[in-house]
Amino acid sequence: MSTDKEPAPPQEPTGAPAPEAQPDMGELTAELDELRDNWRRSLADLDNLRKRHARELQSERSDERARTSAAWLPVVDNLELALQHAGSDPSAVLEGVRAVRDLAVEVLRGLGYPRYEDTGVPFDPAQHEVVGLVDDPGAEPNTVVRVQRPGYGEGDRQLRPAAVVVNKRQE
Image 1 (cartoon, rainbow, N blue to C red):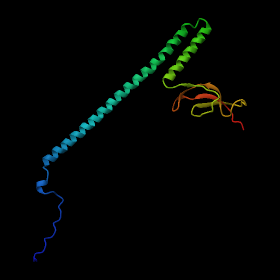
Image 2 (cartoon, one colour; image 1 turned 90 degrees about the vertical axis):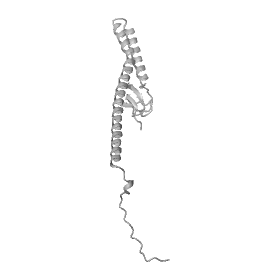
Image 3 (tube, one colour; image 1 turned 180 degrees about the vertical axis):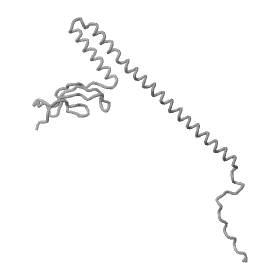
Image 4 (spheres, helix red, strand yellow; image 1 turned 120 degrees about the horizontal axis):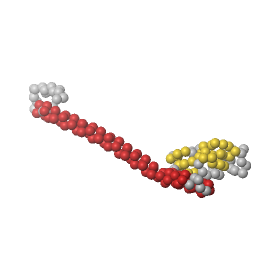
């Protein structure tokens, strides 16, 4: 069966939805207002979180300073006792000062900074600062032969390196 009619030309898409599918302008405005409100609330929540974190950080710093200071109180107390007895027997005062030093070293160790002052160990630039060289045939080359000032800390948590005298490399 043939028809003499030509097919209708294809209609070009307009890109706009059919009139019944178009949202109401009021609905779009309401949705946009809701999105803006959610955005503002999120910004306010983020700002509140930032402020709370800053307060908590300050509080933690204050607490840590108090804990560290409290750890040093026995050292101060013992120094005061040594000063009170300074006029007495010099050997007793010397012994008291040694005890205070030992207590201070223990406080540093408790804070995570142990003391190290080993001799006869290989020189390590991460732990040692060379303050002198000697030529000691009785010691291995490139080893610590004397500690001028002890170091404190370990690994990447160093307060300071040990100041050491190192045996020269022997050729």
